[in-house]
Amino acid sequence: QVQLVESGGGSVQAGGSLRLSCAPSRSIYSIDIMGWYRQAPGKQRELVALYMSSRTTNYADSVKGRFTISRDNAKNTVYLQMNSLKPEDAAVYYCNVKSARLQYDYWGQGTQVTVSS
Image 1 (tube, helix red, strand yellow):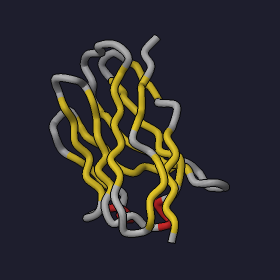
Image 2 (cartoon, rainbow, N blue to C red):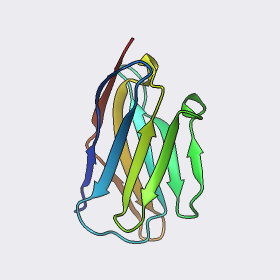
Image 3 (tube, rainbow, N blue to C red):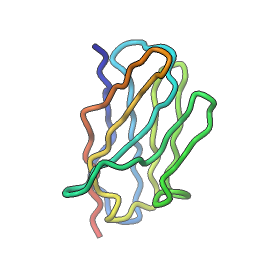
């Protein structure tokens, strides 16, 4: 069973930055999409950013221009650089890796991001 190991969460003041990282516990292949989602208390989990195998990226409108998703192919690690953080960005952030070809869909355990005003 593959585990996704997340790191980089924490507490920051509004306007600050954090960088999240996510790596699988062992090598995995044929990754189609690596992404980040978040869930705030009382809200549904929502998409934050996706990195496709084609190297295209997608972002939620609320984070465009502030967050950047990137991937280290050699390490199969996905990053989320979060700048100009706002209190409404506070949530548990989850990493997701999926493959349509090999039919897997892995989730990380979540990492807390707290933004104080």
